[in-house]
Length: 595
Image 1 (cartoon, rainbow, N blue to C red):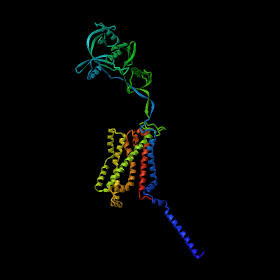
Image 2: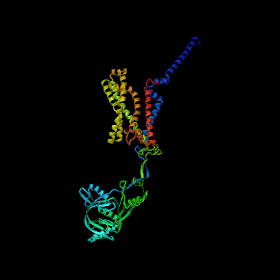
Image 3: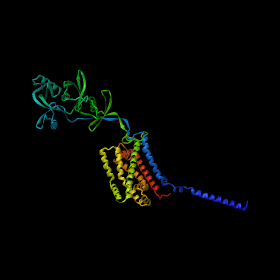
Image 4: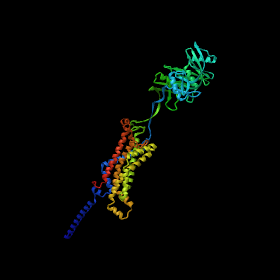
């Protein structure tokens, strides 16, 4: 190899080395490390990377996603409905009848008229003083004492006098009247009938006076009459003759062409109660009863038969606390007697459907049930739907109104800006809480549908809170409209609409997004406050704030933690989650943020 070839080969080797070094330098320039790669990312990817680098922001995002899954997916797969009420069957002592000793006179109009109401006061005074007559409005009425707490108001005409010796009356010419008088004396009653004429007599030792009665106006007694069935009506004749028979000794009496047998019971105080049987063709049928006890059924459609009344009165008189009674259809039940303030309440054990109120957490109801017997976990899921929906819809409406009006005010300035800003000042001066109190009262009065109420709540919240977004957008656009790119859009003849909504608004959206995220939490908190005060969501719908409203009852607050603590925890987590996201977005959009 000559010297020339040797030099050529050496030059070729140097060239290869230089090319190799050049390739390495080019490779080093082309290969980007992480820091260089961030520099060439798009603005959106850069914001996302900064956001995900903020651990609190990621935690907030996870919380909000979990809340949406819990509220929307959870409610969808829940086996229970939002307003489904759970109940159990329990044997309970329910009120069946109320009983009290009647101390008030009962009035029954007579066949010949009625006693004026003003005369009844004077009548009671005459009864108290033992008078045989009383006067009302210049009219004199005769008060006939028929027996214990038993009186008649009628006109009397003297029909003669008689004497009584050895239990026999003499001195009455009419044989039929004399026989009836002797029978009345034997029976211990003070009146009797012969034909169509009623007689009344008084005795003073062995001397007696006989009167005929006419113009019967009133029957006055403290006894309460009851019939076997609700359709039977007891007329004046039956009630008078039945009670007169109660005061006598006869076992039968006649009224209305029928014969009745009487079965008397006298208590220690001399008060008589009786059961009356209709006698027809040798067969006796229970017809009615009378006693001093006033007994009324508690439930509608319940009829207390004389047999039941008699059994209850006997048990009360004997001081029993319970008694058994067999109905006509053979049904036997035990009744319990409870005395309250001089009255008695008769209770009967029945199978009753009872709502599962404040049931403790169990496998069937993981968080128990609320005060309406509804599953708490399901109510929380559906309540989350309302709370989150209110938050997002209100903030979305605020952003739309605020961006449009703020963008127009910031771009045009001048009188347009002044007009819109004064409108903002007016809305800022509206007192929100009094407004909600007034609107809530109106909606309660109008009995507005709960779902319509929710939409009205969102509308009012949007109207009250949009001015803050308008001020933010207006302030940002006032500075952006003077920059070079806006001068370029004006020079190229771009329309005003595109200048505002294509070139200006996108430049303020990062700040709007951050503010909207922060506002979501405060809106949900405000809705919860309104529902807690009873001004927001109404039953049967639920929101987290409405659920917490249960703590208005101190007993629920201290004894049923599962009713209100879970809803409070969900509100706290949701608000914290939105605040964490808002802080993360604020840092991610900050151009001074370290890369």
